[in-house]
Image (cartoon, rainbow, N blue to C red; front, side, top):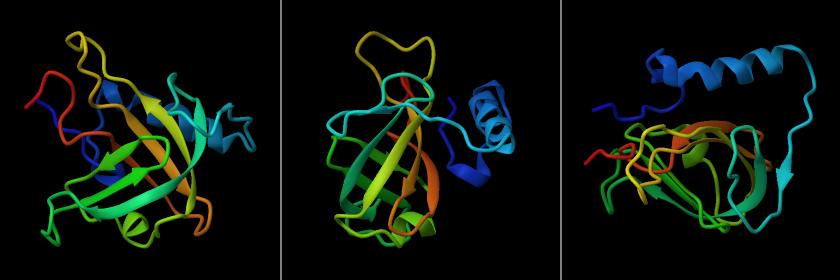
Length: 140
């Protein structure tokens, strides 16, 4: 069972290909990124939406050092087993841009866990890449 690791510690696997595509695009200069309405989560790879942070906390309730977690006004959520300093420096109300970069394949019907988003805090300029759950679909 593979659990998604955050930005810098992600293993290089076939699941890493979306990262390579985004890195290659970024190296080409400014890129037009499709933005969906502020009210929803991106649904296709490469699509982005703008929303705001509603909660910044830890992966485990009242457990400092257990990892970072962040919730958004559009219903989105991201979590990491690592402490992500860009998340920890964010504040409730900060505007962000969330871009969907990975959707796991072969998931059981109704199990949508494991979508990976790169989120940029528009106040700080800092960005992070984390999944929407601690485990990918079909996992624990």
